[in-house]
Image 1: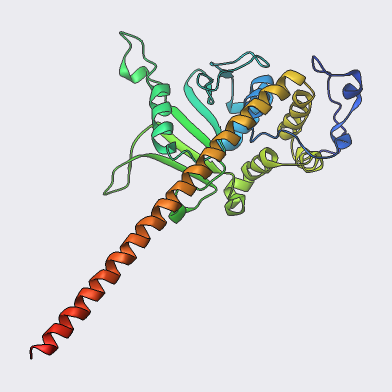
Image 2: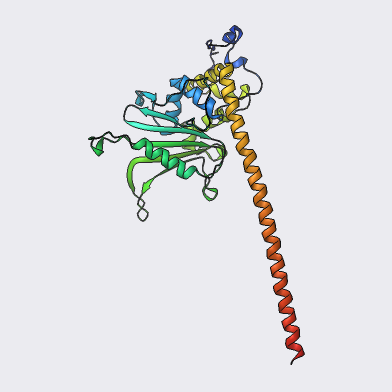
Length: 296
């Protein structure tokens, strides 16, 4: 455990008082944690050490194995964004030899499988005209979902590859899909815990600074993540962008409730019609039986 108090450096747009706070001084609820996809991107784009630490946990790498981790689709943090145009994924080139997509997704839009495959294929399709196919860099798409993708096969951290459907051997390592189920941290395996992936998930979902401070004491990577998150939370423009994303998802939740209500209403109408039809069939059978008995 890291017992040293880590002093938070002063970010732009933050009052001077913030610069004297330490992780242990953080108190109260967190307005925007890292399940907010803008905060998620902002932390990882701002602090490359946090990005490297998360990748180490996800891919089971050692720190020495990561020579470079470059976000190749950065945004200008704090600028207004158009929800229709804003790309939610973080596209990374690792060691100039591997492409990684990271994406935070709180709401089940019922399109994750196709969406993740499309993003993965786009990442893999990076060859320029005249390049040899052997020069194609492998691609990995990793989604952090706050819901269970396959109810019959619940896992905390699941990985998928192209395999032979009969013999189950891997066709290629060039394409990999992984999903971290933030709603089932309780299913984390010993291997997941060994690489602190469960701790990252808890950090993302933490709702109080006390929880974050406790998790930050586990290792330097999460300590850095907590500091960066606190710095960004003190920036008014970052808060506005996080709020915009939250309102966007609230609208989606509202639409889903309306759709669910209309679906339930439709199903009730269909069920009532089915009941009427069944009742009519029973009445016809009763009349036929009565007629048959009268003519016997």
